[in-house]
Length: 76
Image (tube, rainbow, N blue to C red; front, side):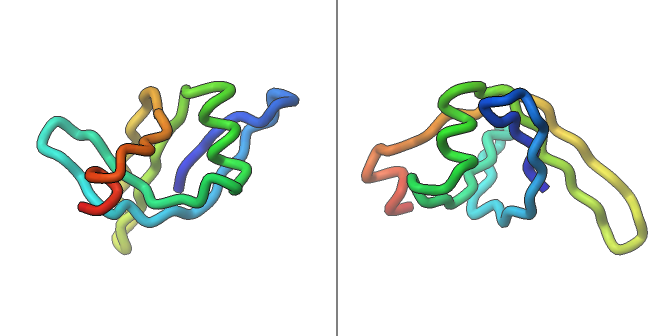
């Protein structure tokens, strides 16, 4: 799940599927530019990712997101 904050300071949580994770814990999530979460990240880059395993083990990662538009990164 990815948590963002909308323009009225309401939290928004939605399921996402990471497409790539780098060794430095950079997590890439595919997303269309027209989706609300993209504009929410531009307006307020503070986000949190939450993972829940079938056995209910949990992991939360708080950080700053950015919209990546570099063609070579997207192609990877």
